Amino acid sequence: MRIALSNDHAGFALKPYVKDLLTALGHEVTDVGTADDTPVDFPLMTQRVTRLVVSGDADRGVLVCGTGVGAAIAANKVAGIRAAVIHDTHVARQAVEHDDVNVACLGAWIIGSKIAADVLTEYLAASFSTAPEFRRRVEQLAAMDAARTSVEGSRDNA
Image (tube, rainbow, N blue to C red):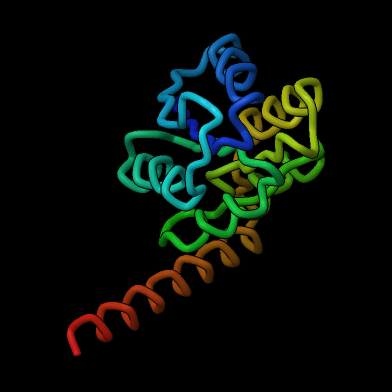
């Protein structure tokens, strides 16, 4: 799988471990995160991943920040992105199986390397369910994205 990886300054310490883990699991990693712990705005670092996922240049994304929450909020502003904070294996697996999550957000202040390894392994091994109710719900999310994009476009043209 092609994985886009980014981090802000708060996620910098955990990111090298995450990158090595993803590579060891056999994934192709595109690291577009910050290279040190100098403060940087997480929305900008998040956009680097969401662009790759939306364009199809990455199959999934992984964002590492302090709590994972800011990255998830920023990522979910982008049409076509379904991001979730994943700090346990059940959520990591179900987020993909039920909600077709394509960007995982980790909080480096919250979890350590062992939990990061467990949740990322589950996240990347999971597949979106073929069950009609899950497919229907994700289609509804896509319709919400389209409606938001349409409203934003009409405001831009006004």
